[in-house]
Length: 411
Image 1: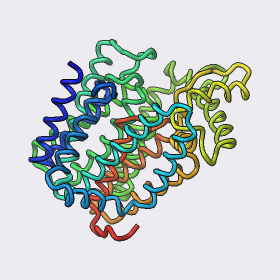
Image 2 (image 1 turned 135 degrees about the horizontal axis):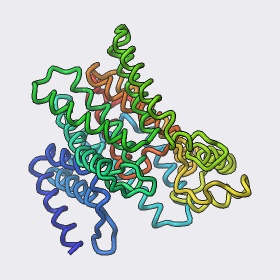
Image 3 (image 1 turned 180 degrees about the vertical axis):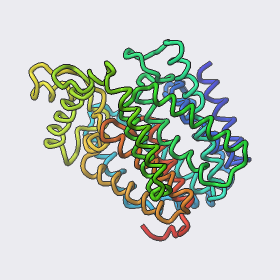
């Protein structure tokens, strides 16, 4: 049954990709969170989101293979050097890894798939179609936000720490996905909109903010504040009422949480807390990075190396096992080596150069979303997950699509 369902999803997406590529890509973006629904094609593991993307890309390319392939390759011209560095890092990370199957799965799900999605967005969408792509991202958050709020109301959580997480295994995963999209959605604040569009924005934005609040992800809140600061600097830098209101809201948020048990646990470095654990994790990351800065430790090898290294630093570590580095930049360095980290940083710099050449109405929300990802990356690990990597590349694609100086001849 699983195989048949995979084929049905693939075939349906192929037909839509052939007949209506823009609608097919819109559906692929909408379906990003469905990566949690696992399935198989024969012995090969896959997901609903991946099958939709695969069918869409095959249908689109099959319509006119030579022309479409040329268009797809052209979309990567502005980011050629960062892509080459990332590819080199992926090769190094795969060769360094002791688990080839796991490494290839990471390459496929967190790099090849989202990079293909990026290429199709840039090739198919124009600036005038960008709002519809944004609507797909916003729609994808609604089930997550509603589910998270139901958890908060009923107390029926699936995480061990009783925080709203929707269907993710960690509340932090929820905020990592929601916050950049919430900031992107502020595009509708500064564009001429109808009443229905304004209602649509405020409903989805409010639900998302509430979901982030009940996730109690302080990294998510930090990222949201950083993104809102970008919006404020662009649009309200001379309006003292905005800053006064923001200051009051921030003060209220701090005041309501300052005496909470979770905050007390978090900032108590003498006991096990999110802060004390992260300090030990980052110290361990730094030691691993010092010894493996050139090649990294291999794709997907962090959970294997962490227990051995942390035990050298601490006789009784607060956490003897850890899935990831709790830092975006350490994660790239340890997975892909210095070459891969350089490629990622270069890609981000290129992204901000594209943003600089976009219209103000798009530059502001895209900048805010990117800043949120980079800020959250200081304390957690955005990108290194199916939905987060896809989201990163869609945001980058929006910057390229809205670039007013669309010269693909320069890198």
